[in-house]
Image (cartoon, rainbow, N blue to C red; front, side, top):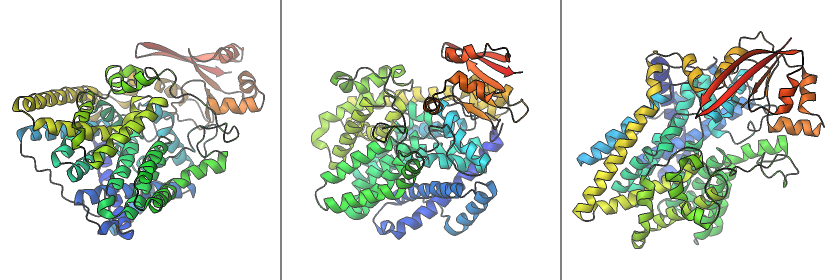
Length: 592
């Protein structure tokens, strides 16, 4: 299984690579910040470190893209480049002091470190997330095998904004799946540190500390952190863009606007969902009256500087910079589909007002991920302290409201709500800090509730990562783990044994990361649109192409099932897989 590595040695080697990559990114980013004058401002050491790492990660992703487009996706090129960059730009990380005094704070900090460690270990297990196997890791794997970055035929995603996928490509090149997953995990502690720094500067050190703790113990955040997804990196760059906006009085509106735009451009380069943050932050800059025109131009210039290459690629190849969306506007290049269909609970005013309640109590209606109870328990109480809100708190609330409205009307999956979670963490922490200074009785009960919730979440984290321990000590093999946890794996096990160059058609979910055959075509919307343009049916296409293997499931459409009744195809392999109470039946037919 190409690029797959599990166990203690790979995770330790991957950790070493991650530290080296972050050290290089920190050094390169620090040099870039000094170049635009940001490094001469009155930032705290922790702020310089976070912003430097962010800029360095952006530049690292762009470097992978440029080298990949030029056809230099070779592990030795990147290993040599990493060593050179480390020699010339590597910088040690600054010492960070949290000044913990109370026993309660020590308990919170110890629990948070434990949660981060558990999620770190969980990165050592084989990838099983649907989107990771479908494109977040599958496309970088294809790029590496080809030695270059290219538009993958009949792919919906390979021309999307792929900034974080470039980091996954780097991880797969240097070490394998563990390092690739650690590249996403890195945004877990980075965002937590950013929350601590923001709270310490604008609210209080206690608020920053509590916000980081709340964020770390958000179940959807923990679940995402060890997978090769992009939602945590999106949340990180959006929050840092807002952070830079709030620094305008400290570093000047010009530098603040430019840097906020660069970071917002990084969010837009991560996922189309980042464009919503571009609109919200642009509105904030427009609302700021002094130097409004100059600031919005610098902000827009920063967004364009970082994100133009991603949207330009899509436009050059497809005539649509946001493929597959807005097909009507871009002359049919793409297709429309409702990401909200079947999710959420109502689309009216009542549904919006109860959004936080519904996500908390009915997670299955929002994709299955859970926010946990702390946001619902404390964030709404911030309205009772409205007179104490500083300007930054007003903007925090405005972002949550505007992004929540966008989320509610478009993409109501809990993980798509991640960009708002850092903001909500600060609001909830603000309330907690106020309650701690209230009457002694109320303060004690608040501390008791928080400690109880954190203890429960930590127990859940241990339970969720229980499979990783057997893999790390090699009590269970990766193949056995995948045969239990990933429903596509046994099918690929069978197909990978076929003598190449076998032609394979997969009329199943496009979870193709574990595919080892070079001639696999997965059914999907791009292929169907192509066939519609050619005025050809799927059965006619299959008859013409004469695939050696056709992989179907009980959900495959009847036309393909009927085609397989032809005498030149016979059943070669079948298996069942139960997941979430649903039985999936798979069959692979072989042409003879």
